[in-house]
Image (tube, rainbow, N blue to C red; front, top):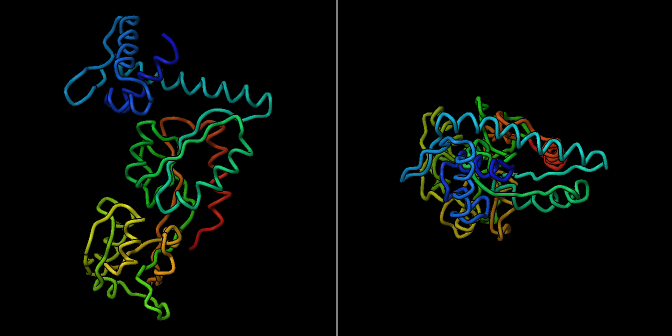
Length: 296
C-alpha cells in the first residue's frame, strides 16, 4: 500500500466513478483501475462494488476511506510542518469561486498567494454555489466562496460579506432610481435556473410580498446574462461585482432595490476534513482581499 494508491482510492470513492476520478486526477482510467485492484489484492478485500452507473463502497471500503482521509491529511500536515521549519507554507489548495467574483479576485489573489506562499500551489475553479458545495463534500475543493449557504453536518460556513443586489438594465441615459419588488415583478427577468442562490433569494422575497417574477430567460452564465441585458433582452438581478465583469459595462445601469436586498457571501469548507495551515492562510488572504469590500 502506498500514498498514491490511497489518494486514487479516495478520489474514486468520493466521486463514485472511475471515469470522473481519472479526469480529476489526470490519470488514464486503466492505470487507475489497476492501482485500485492492486490495493484490493494486497488487503485481500473488495473495496468497491462496480456497476453500470459507477461504484459504491463495501463495508471494508468505508473503513478504508475514513482511515485514508486521515492518513492523507496527516501527510499534508507533515509537509506543512516541515515547510514551517524553513519558514514556508506548502501543499496544494483547491479554491472555488462564483462567476461574479472569479474575474475580479483571481488575479489579485494569485499574485499575493505567490508572494507569500511560493512553496504552495493554488488551483482555482469557477462554479455555482450548489455545485461547489458538492465539490467540497467530494474533496474536489478545499475552500469555496458561496452565496446564502446554510451550514450542514458536512459543510462549515463563515460569513464573509453581505453583497447588495441591484436590478441591472440596459443603460437608457436616465438617472438610476430604486426599484421595488412590485416593479421588478413587471419586468422581463433574465436569471439563472434553480437552485442558483440569487434566484432562490429573489423568488423567496417576492413570494413573501405575494409576487411572482416574470422569467424571460433562464441563463446560468453571468457573462451571457449581462450580454443579453446589454442587448435589451431583459433585466437581471446581480451584485455590483458581477456587473463589473461585463465586457460592455457602459451599456448597463444598476438600480438599487427598495427595500435593499442582500446576498450573503460565505467561506465554506468541509466539516469532515480539518483545514491545513496553508488552507487557513488562503482563507486569511481571501478575508484580506474581499472582507473589507462588502456592503451591508
